[in-house]
Amino acid sequence: KWIKDKFKRYEPYHPLFDRTLVMIFEKASTRTRLSFEAGMHQLGGSAIYLNTRDSQLGRGEPVEDAGQVISRMSDIVMIRTFEQEIVERFAANSRVPVINGLTNEYHPCQILADIFTFIEHRGSIQGKTVAWIGDSNNMCNTWLQAAEVLDFNVHVSTPPGYEVEPERAGLYGTANFEQFADPMDACRGADLVTTDVWTSMGFEAENEARMKAFADWCVDADMMSVAHKDAVFMHCLPAHRGEEVTAEVIDGPQSVVWDEAENRLHAQKALMEYLMLGRIQD
Image (tube, rainbow, N blue to C red):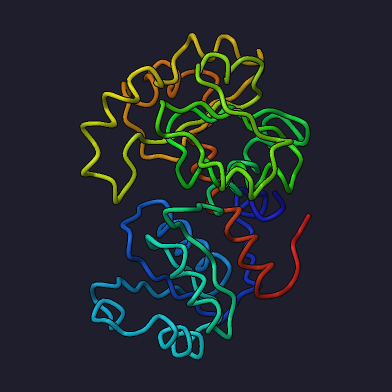
């Protein structure tokens, strides 16, 4: 919040002067690239964009070798890729901090921004209930992970065949997590209702089947009506109105998606400062 307040007051703040962020992208992005690149610039540093198709990584260079070399020429690295293993192998061979910008399994930077957004609008998330409606994808996985750390509850509702895998649920315990067959039941009493696209990047071949399977998992006014009266709606974007959420909800008064999107910038600036300087402002 402190970093965001300075940004809103147009106050220069350059704790990362002359530091370099390397951003490695295998998956395309709008918000991730923009928020990290702009954020590093605003903190006084610079950002270098690498697409795996245009680098030796795309020609078969071992991830371990790339980690050794890139980390000797930078101060921090962000990777947005398909496999979680890639991030972990790179980090194991890096001399500098490595940020998971997104993988098929996790999306921690987005959840960091989402929780910050909830706190801004509704206060502490501890003891609250998040309703996740739709695919048990990387966003769902990261909500479950965060719930165990920050002590809030997650209600998950997915179509049959798309449930949270038992072994994954077991990673985070079951005290904060419950699955529901009916999305209305998952939303009942929730403080935050959230969703994502039905077909994530890398799963395009399943799109037709997913459109049929997820038809009843569109977040609409009826679902929001059974949530807590002060519930907010979030979506990591990009959104497909009429599929995973109605226009009435995402463009309605309970939606905080634009604050949520902006907060990627501020949350990641705080994250980079913490990882490089070992501090975080109140």
